[in-house]
Image 1 (spheres, helix red, strand yellow):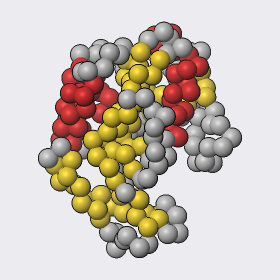
Image 2 (tube, helix red, strand yellow; image 1 turned 135 degrees about the vertical axis):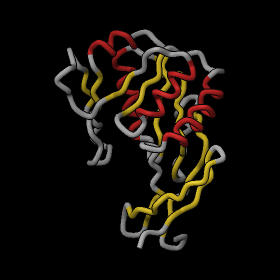
Image 3 (cartoon, rainbow, N blue to C red; image 1 turned 45 degrees about the vertical axis):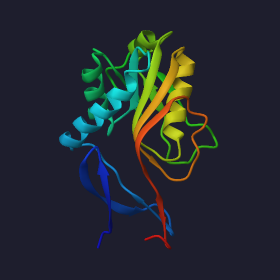
Image 4 (cartoon, helix red, strand yellow; image 1 turned 90 degrees about the vertical axis):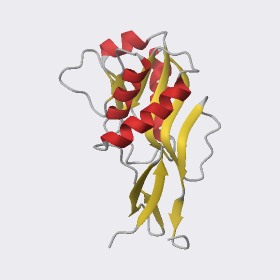
Length: 187
């Protein structure tokens, strides 16, 4: 039997399944993929906050955040956005690959950006978009990749900040809601 954690986000109620991530810890699993209503509401709220920030492109990891980045780009009048892949794809020309740093968890995959996107982002201001930030590893990987290609990260946005980790090193970290980690004593 799955336990759920109720959340109200942008006026919409959702029940998030509690998923074990270790012997004594569970997370409330937030997945915006496939939820068009929530994606639109979240994009509206985040776009209001992003209107105050000057930037050229939105950048995010595959795959769950793709509908959100699309909605944000549409609402903000941006004609292009960039998705970092986890492996080189046949359509890519001169891709740049960032392998996880040695101190990152073993499950972290490389990030890959297409050569055309690399050229487009070089010298530009970007906003990193993700659905959930818990450890910050994905965001840091994208930031390192942007530094490597010469793009400047001016803000990071997420729907949810999860856990107790501090994210002081992220410039302009914007999020809409917080989720705790669930220890055996809190479940």
